[in-house]
Image (cartoon, rainbow, N blue to C red; front, side):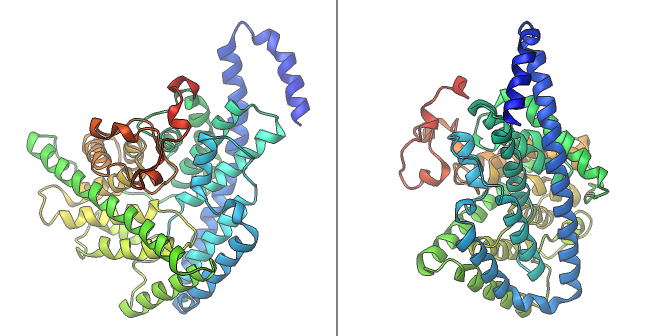
Length: 447
């Protein structure tokens, strides 16, 4: 197929030479449609499987007792057959920064199986990580099939990430911005605008065509913007940002603890499963495992226990730190929405608005993607809440500092002049006194 693609390009080149923009748009429209069909269909399969796993677990809660065995199976799957894809999302980001070998296609089925098993047996995880890995690994297969150049490969990976994120949450605009924003802290990849948006929109259309639905959220009341309300929003944004730091720091710390003291990797999720399953039976509730979507919806309309967000942090950090599979984002939605609900005891803003602000702002701080999260809020809640959620996301982004859930995220532009010496470093190296990567030494135009 690659030779056919090259011949087609040579044939088309003379006609398009005078109109390079047209050639670029046509080329990426076709590639984005391909990515959208495959990634959107994979997202539909993933979401349907996730719903089945969740419903079955909630109807047969005894299966949670087998979470350690499920963890052992996931650990063995990756230890014996998936070492080259176990870095997950960070492998995708590494390949955007420093393109190397094609990402193995097995990343998609491995993370799909691992995530469904995590949810089936009762781990606390999300779905964004799975969507990104499915999208990135599927999209990258076109690099070899079509003989794409290294520059095109970077855009292919961005498109796959955008398609996966946008289709799994039903937020294509946020998915596109996320794909452009996530790999470089403080910088956007503007030459990827069309591929990212087209791929995300195509993927969302395909997922919808498979009759796979998404959860709908509603903020009942959005007050008019005033100086006082703006100050309360900034205060809430600071709380969301600090919480995102607690989450990412604790997840990395627990992961480091497991790696340091448990030499055999498959035992890490097995022991983590013992901890999580024991806590579920001790508390007598499944409220803090799985996606937690019913609680998220409830946070917009009812007063919840103020400790819900703290328990979700603990359950999720142990699950992911022990190397179960899944994402961080939906648990971050839970943490943010329930924290916003708790803040309504002290902050005189509507409960639903605070829950919506927290829903996206904790994620914005943890992933360092304030623009994507603002777009997500507008797509999910409507434009009426735009000013509030935008301010909360931006403040959370600044309060999270140079920390986050993606260790391979490179600091393109520091959040404050005081930390400019950290520009060019991946987040995983910041607190270790690491050196700048070769990516940080390139000019912006090189990307």
